[in-house]
Each structure stands twice: as structure tokens, then as C-alpha cells.
Length: 126
Image (tube, rainbow, N blue to C red; front, side, top):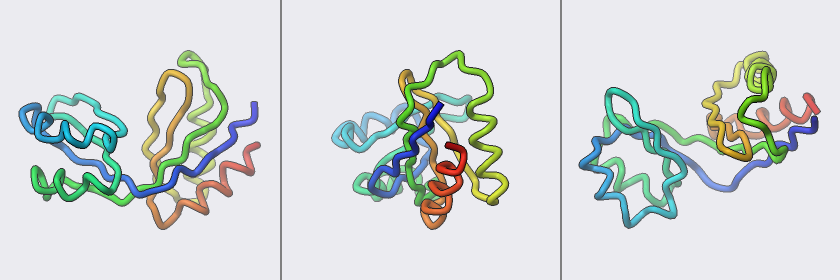
């Protein structure tokens, strides 16, 4: 399978917000890339244009910038081993990765300054 890594333009930030704070971000719906509920609160991934407002809600918990790489290959949520192979290739290059599997594609958040290295490592996988 050709994974077809595609670098998405922009910088992305992770933040932890309370459920009540999420409503304050509704004007940035186009900038919210992902939301994941954890026991400690909601992890929100936002594009750079929303970062300052998110930081205003929880500045000490803002992390980034990250680059977003979307795998162009349509993947199956039941596929076994794909992310292990991908994260292994990035680990060999000492590149941190936060992976998110969505319905059609897998998405990787890597440190922004290592984005080109990450794409090269993924292209080597084929």
C-alpha cells in the first residue's frame, strides 16, 4: 500500500480545555482539527489562527507548534500494523509523532521543525 504522505499547510497546537471552555471556541470551528475527551478534560487541536484564544483559556497547557501530515491512502479502521510501521520509521529518525486515525485517513502531528524529515522518512516506506 502506498501511504502517500501529504504535508498540510500551517501550524497546529494541542490544548487541554474544560467542557465549559469549549463553547468559547465555537467561533473557531473551522480552526478546530480534532477534539478528544480524556478523564482530565478535552484535548483540542487547533490551527494557528485560534491558538491565542485557546491559550487565553489554558495558556499553561498549550503545546506546539506541530505540522500535520495526512496519509493520502484510504485506510481501514481495522487495519493491523500500519501505524506501528509508520511510528517505527519516525522513531528511527527520533521524530515524535501523535497519530490520529479518522474514518478515511490517518493523520500525524510531528514537531513543526522536523516536518520535512518526517515526510522523507515516510516516503522511504513507500
